[in-house]
Image (cartoon, rainbow, N blue to C red; front, side):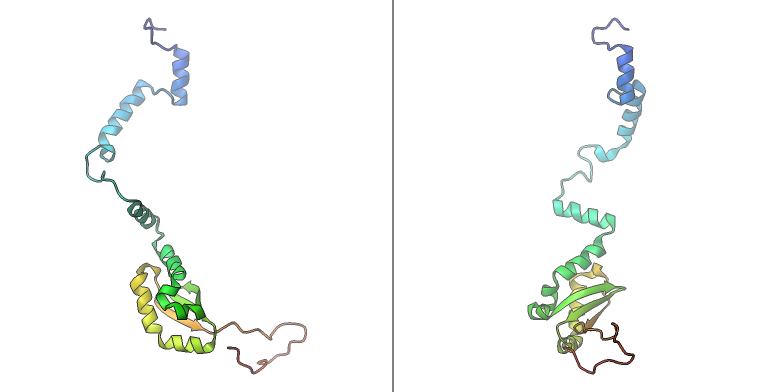
Length: 164
């Protein structure tokens, strides 16, 4: 034990060093050397200017590789703005895989009409959401019931009725 009044007993000092609460003199030298080489934490250097939350989040999503996933989610969420309110009332995007967006329509008439407008809608999607990776659109009609299951199903094409 030392004669200084502020000295801590060696057992307590050792305990604090082991717990990381009071760094040893060697650790101080190591930290000082590391801090001197770390320019990122120095004040008044480049890159230390304050940034907005939107800029920080955009940089974070870009570094994480989430740009395409977020663009796809935005496309589905903003479908009414992309396709138009009336069109969005009769359609909904159901799948996006391998660059092909599949849109389900209320009727086969809507599907056929939107096939004619495919280029316009695709151009709008690529303009607004380039990171979504949409290369084509497929419009399908409504789901039809399947007659190919159950105990009394017979082989063949089933009923000849149109749905939609």
